[in-house]
Amino acid sequence: MSQAVEETESREIAEFRAEVRAWLAENRPPKPDFVMPQNFLFVETNEQFEYLRDWQAKVYEAGYLGLDWPAEYGGGGDTLKRQRIVTQETGRAGTPFFVNTIGLQWAGPVILKYGTEEQKKKFLKPILSAEEIWCQGFSEPGAGSDLASVQTRAEPAASGNGWTVNGHKVWTTIGTRAKWMILLARTDPDAGKYPGLSFFLMPMQVPGVEVLPLIKMTGEGGFNQVIFTDAAMPRGAMLGAPGQGWEVAMATLTFERGAAEGTGGGQATSSADTVQRAAKLASQTQRDGRPASEDPLLRDRLVQLWMQEEGLRLGGMRRRVPGLSPDRPMVLALMNKLVYSEYAQNLAELGCEILGPDAALWMGDPNAPADAEWPRAYMNSFGMTIGGGTSEIQRNILGERVLGLPKSK
Ligand SMILES: Cc1cc2nc3c(=O)[nH]c(=O)nc-3n(C[C@H](O)[C@H](O)[C@H](O)COP(=O)(O)OP(=O)(O)OC[C@H]3O[C@@H](n4cnc5c(N)ncnc54)[C@H](O)[C@@H]3O)c2cc1C
Image (cartoon, rainbow, N blue to C red):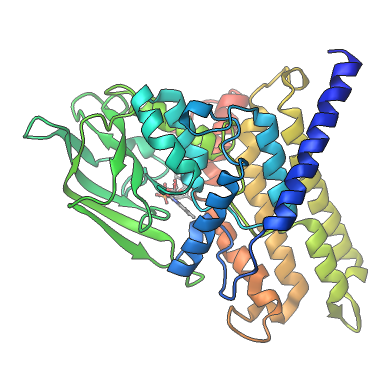
């Protein structure tokens, strides 16, 4: 590529970035007078949900969501590069996260990859506009890390039209709000563990689907169990072919874990925890009569975390240039979830340490610094090292697929 073209492109991108930045400054919603969840996993009350849904709809209407999805399905028919700029800028501006994260980041991309024309036309636009919220029905009481053990059954309906679903899903994020679920179910119990699975786009608001909320250790909701009792799923609900469920589920997980890029717009969290924020907290917090930031051990830990943060940022840029990781092409993509979730946990832990005993003050306590955002982030961070595949499983994947170690039993 000539230098002139590169310069033109970067000028274009800079202009687009400035446009997005100005739009966000003008249109960001007013700070709500209720406690906001830190990310899409913890949305609970109607006021939280409606506030977030309105924000996503507004961003979509302005043309800043689904930029890289085809225009015929409601997308912008533009480039992933420009969508990335929007995601960077919403993160920088600290605007609210997008409530339909499961739709935008996992259901939408797999529908784009495996869906029929009819499915793409029906499902993609309402994902972007947040008219239709999606949840994910993978985990079951007996199938988490060993996902291929799912026992929920989808059988051809006795009427000959569609499917009948029976089973029990658990840890279903945002299940109470969802209109649709990406469902992994067993269609052929005799076909073996993996080929017996199929993947479906299951309606949630039908008889026989019971959503039972669960409470997390922070006292917040967001999680659910979902019980299916002879629930009807229409003909045409299958995504991909019969028996292809494992392949489609694995493709979903590569989107979920950030290993494959292809999102309608990325920001899934509002907690803008960065090392810079922790450093600011340290300089504003007194310890032994001096700012905590003067403690050399604390400074050392801040620098360690800052190096991780920079490593993540630069790694994200490097993995977009295939020639830069020729020896192990997938390593950066496969490391993404593991490294990010553990970095976020260490950072939140450090924030709590800086606060000292004040970290024990909880949400609603008028003396809690920043309404207990740091201890809340710390407790929530454990979910991030479990959801979408635990850190142990991510290490197994790296060991097996990147280092070529023998498979774990
Ligand atoms: C915040 C959050 C949101 C979630 N949202 C959803 C959702 O929307 N939809 C959904 O379907 N699921 C969801 N999940 C479930 C999540 O995918 C599972 O919790 C996860 O896959 C782990 O499964 P499990 O909880 O059954 O733990 P288990 O699989 O029982 O694991 C228990 C422990 O054993 C370890 N372990 C298991 N197998 C191995 C192995 N082979 N090698 C080494 N260690 C191993 C694990 O690392 C873990 O420490 C969510 C979970 C969380 C925390």
